[in-house]
Amino acid sequence: MNATGRMRLALSLLILIGSQSLTGCASVSVAPNGEEQFGHRESGDSMDGRSTITVTPPEEGTEYRFFAATYDTAIIRPEVVASSTSDGGISVEVLVKGAFPDSCSQLHDVVQQKAGNLILVTLTMRRPQGAICASVLRPYRFYLELDGQFDPGPYSLKLNDISHPFVVRNTPNN
Image 1 (spheres, rainbow, N blue to C red):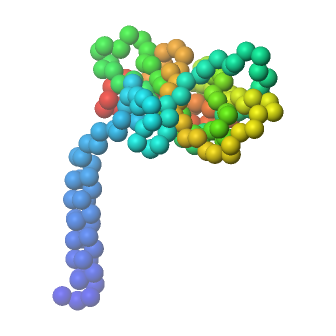
Image 2: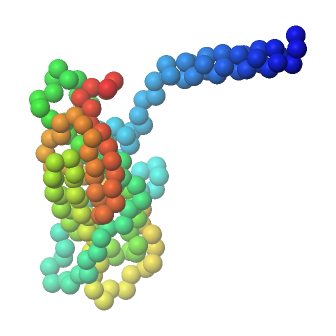
Image 3: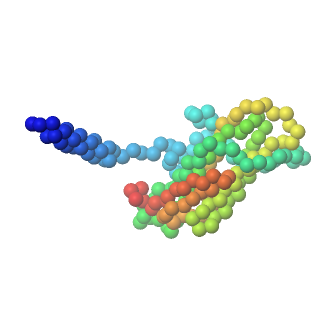
């Protein structure tokens, strides 16, 4: 066999081996971890050191400074429903992970607006004016259920001016 024949044989073997390994990978089904599942909740401190927070009312008589909440990650989690049981819409929740910049800051408010397939969400934090706060990062996680029901299709969540595209499906296999 000449050099060209050996090259063709080697190339054919590589293609065969590659296609076999891709076939094997394609059949593997990976279940989403808890953070990716609709309805999954970590309460208290989680394994990643983040505390679960909620929006709390401000103390009366205290003046605050308000600013956009900082966050690292937004995990968008549509509800998984079978198409035959869907009642015309799917719920979507967002797991927001971030860190407060000091020991005094808290989540203040969440405002949602929906225009077609664009969802605008503003998370606001507050900090008491004039307070002396330790400069420590306080990791948090916040669960937010988006208002309304979503039909299957592509969407864009704009969370504090950062876009996060996502797709709502009516069955787990679409």
